[in-house]
Length: 202
Image 1: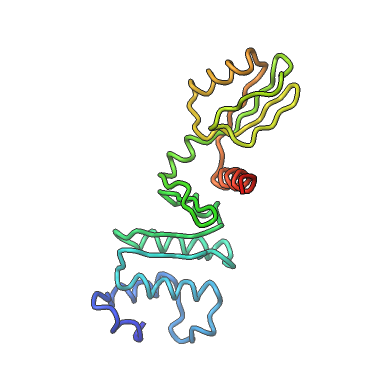
Image 2: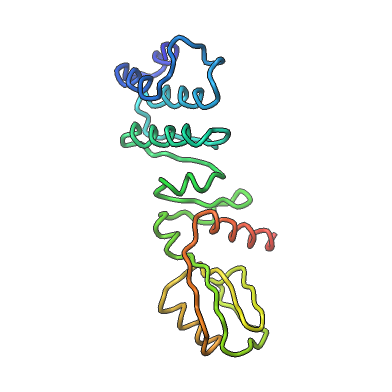
């Protein structure tokens, strides 16, 4: 902390001390002797002490136990007043618990960027039990991904789910059905779906 302080005119010494207490960092121990989780906390404390407007975290949860992950997330959210936090991570369950916006990179290209609520609202896993045998081939709507079908069951992911529009399309293609199951998808399932589609297209 003493080493970094001169680099930042807006360094807040009182805030720095609060962060050390909040993260329970031992002041009498060298950084190289800290655990991985404690080193992450030290890096975060030293970054938040000068009240940055942008915080970039690359795979911040790797190698951390569940308790340290929670403390790290809580620390970022509580202490990053007015800052934008950009996190690059494959740990989607953690990201899903607090992210407000999501971007998806595939082979170096940004495929989409949108609010978390919008993303999870438009993705649904759908399974249809048919009343009549399915006559193939079918021209699938472009928004339906990872389609699977047998004589009696059809499964797919609708990436633009709308209750009325989707059900209209289902009945247009399949007529009467015995059962239609519509299930929300966690972030990990959404990204796995998109990754599979991207791999097939490559």
